[in-house]
Length: 320
Image (tube, rainbow, N blue to C red):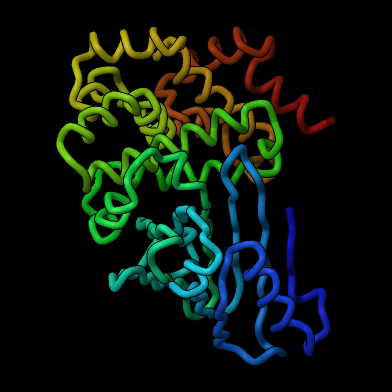
């Protein structure tokens, strides 16, 4: 949902409108713009997905600051996870004395109630972030705090990053949809796994690793879905379990591993075949880009799933 686009406002009202919106939506109490009011631009979108609040903020250079004093005064017991969108330069993140340059592959984490934090970028930037009540994580505040400078060392960071980008791509559809709570729960599980993978006691790490294993496997599948060598053996090895354990885990979670992968790949190929921006690509090229190495096998699978061949579906989509 669009909350603010400063281009829609008179120049004299832009700074104040931005300050009011980020204070209300994100608890920010200081905004430092790189540009004059005439040159600055901000677009802010917000969605509520179950217990999560998802933010997409883009525009000219800026520095957002939330002070420790404000956090304590408002007693906001929440955690925020921040990312810098691909293709939008590098962001600067600071929290609890830790500073990190956030490129497209990094995550910033902050527990609001105990620390001040800041985030921003120069040039044109874009941040996709979410916040959630810390009670959802089921972890001590000190554990969350200890993880802040260590996130870059976690193998879970890239999984959560891809998951957040997926949430953003489909935010308009899933906000308020029946699957919103399940997707929010998966996000919380991945965030919890990220934190304990670099902080916390060994017992807690083992416990959370077991609890979140299926969520991490599914996130891994989504992140590597288009790769032809996404085999059960590779998936099991990446998560430190046997193939037998992997299959049992999926069965207990009510899904068939191979069918899940094929279904998601077919959905991706089907969408690309119908999209105008992919009209110049051959059916075979689209199939390969979704992990199908053999065109005939792809066509048979596609026809079985949708009742049309890929070429028929593309033609049907173009005349609708």
